[in-house]
Amino acid sequence: MSKIFVPAKPSIYTETLDSLTARFKESGLPAFRATQVMEWLYGKRVDTFDAMTNVPVDLRNWLKTNYVIMPCESIHVHKSGDVTEKILFQLEDKQLIETVLIRYPQEGVGLEHSRKTVCISTQVGCAYACKFCASGLNGWKRDLLAAEIIAQLMHICRMEALGSQRNDGIPFDNIVVMGMGEPLSNYENVLHALTTLNADWGLKFGSRRITVSTSGLAPQIIRLSEEPVQFRLAISLHGATDEVRNQIMPINKRYPLDVLIPAVKQFTEKHGRMITLEFILIEDVNDSFDQAEKLGEIAADLHAHVNLIPYNTVEGLAWKRPNIRRQQKFADVVRSAGASVTIRKEKGDDISAACGQLKLRKENEIESLKANDLLTEA
Ligand code: SAH
Image (cartoon, rainbow, N blue to C red):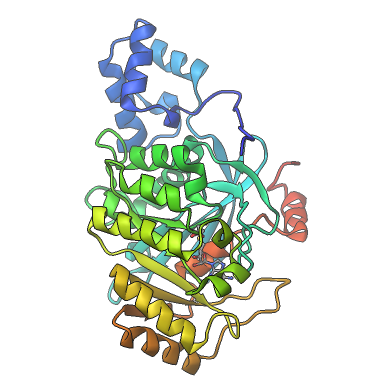
């Protein structure tokens, strides 16, 4: 797919320490300044060049001429209870994306100090058209640039800075790449962004705390297993046989289970860490005990953890989740096949549900944002 967006001015988040150093050298600027600029961006997390007070004014002006810092603007925050916050960003070309911050209330500590996960988007829309997912309802618009992915996290760093208890000052504990889009179909930009977040000169965020979720792009899973930086992997399985998976995930026709499972196996063997199989439970679609048994066998074979997610209603779709008893029985069958399994609790802190519900705003919501001057005309 090739709808490539070229911004008027690139974001400096696009640069690595090496590329910025090279650029500085070309322009006759001292190389050590590149390290200094990175420290301002990812250590102090500033969002203006003028805040870089130990950088000479001439260089700040040079930076301003050549770059912006934030390639997007946060225009709306939608809170659901006090555990989930969805941040709506407007990109330079007026496209909209969302990022979700999920807090896990813990006993004895205020909510601002609770554990937090950030769910990021990687594309505007999604081309994969999984039948149960809201993100693909309006199709695919474009891939996000690496800087647009990094910016989602840097914004949250600034937004939540005061509540952080961690000694690295990063106000969240995990990143899940489970927002809008299929991360492995925007492979280069996603990898570039995650590598920057992990780098010593970048945010220094541990790669084991970053999970990439995919609908099952087998060749890219193999490619990911060969990367020098190893991220965690989650597979959106949702069907334990081709027959069921074909009905709800068109990608299965391209990479059926006998192609997908060996790719995941290769990843696990190379990686040595447990992966997660996500399985949304939809009544009368994939919740038979036969599916549970097959899912258990696949998971046991892959030494994978199974995460059962009771289906969240999507407007316009008639499906519903099975009742609690059925969910538990399904889990029991998976467990008895030798796999470890959990059922997502039914709360606002349901990461996958919160992320899976991301989509371009409904028309009436957009109208009301516009009416309140929160949104400029697309
Ligand atoms: N394209 C990637 C990343 C998107 S995350 C992928 O498919 O993995 C998609 C996740 O959102 C799914 O695994 C599922 O866990 C969740 N999801 C999507 N629609 C949902 C729904 N209606 N109810 C509950 N979870 C949903």
